[in-house]
Length: 255
Length: 309
Ligand SMILES: Nc1ncnc2c1ncn2[C@@H]1O[C@H](COP(=O)(O)OP(=O)(O)O)[C@@H](O)[C@H]1O
Ligand SMILES: [Mg+2]
Image (cartoon, rainbow over all chains, first blue to last red; front, side):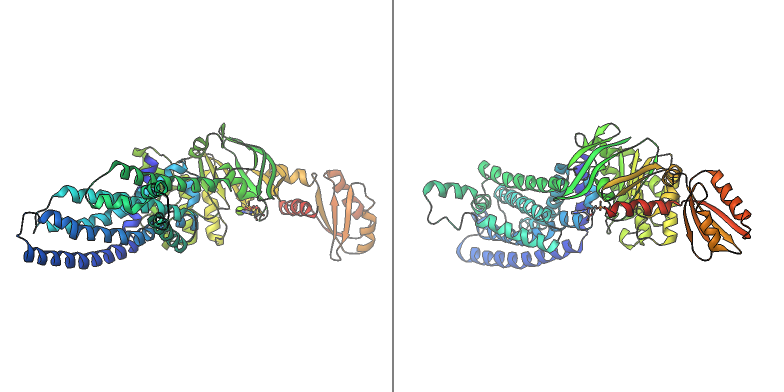
């Protein structure tokens, strides 16, 4: 446990102080601010025109503003998370600091977990920034908090999946460029795993594919419901890719 | 402390080391000497548990590297060929990080980092970013990293490679200071390094051990206790050279023109006979110099002999 935290602490500090993180969080903030304000102002306009303020406004806010905000977070993360995780293992290998990790009294599992936690910490910091927007909205409008928190639980788990995928990509290569590209490809495949074949499949295959679809599970969260099946699915994706990373790290000892 | 039995490692189907057997006792300082590509780094990586051998057995402090890798790694400080330092970390932070990674008890992390900094003379740069340090200092940080957990065993892979002569001398001085506190195995492809720091030498070539002995023992054994004798005379040099070949105990005579070079067996009577012979011949002996074969010659002899077959 201590080894995991030591590693995670070092890499998290490294990530949070890197120029890359500032560029990314700056970029995300600009995009979020623009899109969120637009959506919120147009929503306010419409509420004033068609409805009495108060009453059902809360639920609509979730559907019309938060949903957009959160889909946008997700879309950005597909691209941004691989850039945050690219260095985690690729640079250790490139600069031969991997030798230190492999000859320290820690296991490959410690290494994979520590690196995952570091990535998770950095992405969660980004998610915290994105949470400021709906939170600030509280100042001007009433809305129920539970659906929003459910949606953010979804963001948290999905970003965990991207981190695990990005970490796996980083474990495969010494090149950070290749690491980003692989992470991106994996993320996109994860999204489209069910989409491609959904049309001409038998009902059973379709059901399986639906279960395997990241989009379906994520949609559930955004709509404000936390389903056990979805939590299990996303945790399995995270577990799978952390495990694959552990295997790759371990295999370095056998070459 | 370290026992190695029938150790083999192939990269693909190319053997890097073949059937190594040796052991290192507690407190010894052993030089692992061999030309580039001999398999020094490979052997060290296996001892440290960095990678698995193709076959054979390695025990460190009684633990099998294979079966209890963590126990072994806890006892070893390892400086790889490239010091494993993060260029964007501060020296002190880095050493704290390594101490934590090596499982130094929490309350001792600070003093361990401070101790390593003191031993390696990094006090002036402890607050500096590692990436901004000179190569010599980075090498010291690498050494401090190996020392920080105060391990029983230090494995140093070519600790002075790529340094300038002054930095080299400083690192050697450091290693000498560590003698007695740790069991040290250090690899090198240059002989003076071994002569400067080690008590015992293992010479490895093309993946095989070609000699293993103490520094002085090796000198003696390899030359068969033999000497090379240089003789300078004023007159009749060619005739003297020819007649010297018949003196008992003289193995080889070479007439260089300026002086005569003899290879003799180890006994002193042979030298006495050679001296008497030259004096009796009346050629005017002006110089007679006896040298035991230098380690350098032995090293070259051993490693080039292996290469020819
Ligand atoms: N990762 C590797 N893959 C393939 N061959 C290697 C690898 N590392 C070393 N070798 C080969 O193994 C031999 C021994 O290398 P090494 O142990 O690094 O020698 P040394 O450290 O004595 O210079 C060399 O012929 C080298 O080319
Ligand atoms: Mg080497």
